[in-house]
Amino acid sequence: MPNILSNISTKQKWTLILLLLITPIGFYTKFYSGLGASWVNDSLGGVFYEIFWRLLVFLLLVNARAKVIASSVFRGTSTMASRIPGDYKKLLYWQDSSWNFFQFV
Image 1 (tube, rainbow, N blue to C red):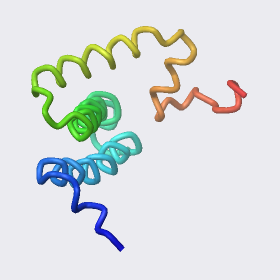
Image 2 (image 1 turned 30 degrees about the vertical axis):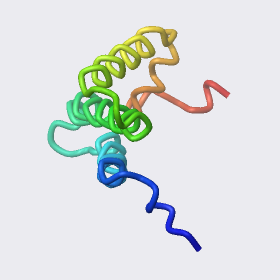
Image 3 (image 1 turned 45 degrees about the vertical axis):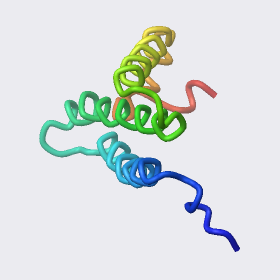
């Protein structure tokens, strides 16, 4: 049985490892309820969200320049967030107590 990781570069291996570390940390920020919870849930969670997408793009496009990846992901996520209609913006805020999943079903 061939080793799946034998065909990818060292950069891609490290990127994959970082993605595996960043993803659970990002989800943790959405469920954090301690000191400064609103900042951690919204602002810090957004940082990990951006890091995740930049690493994922780098994993797929290893030879792309860092500036191009960073600016493209930033523009893409900003555009996506600005185009979400009013009530659906609540989907972005997991800790919003007034939000009820069943109101959209």
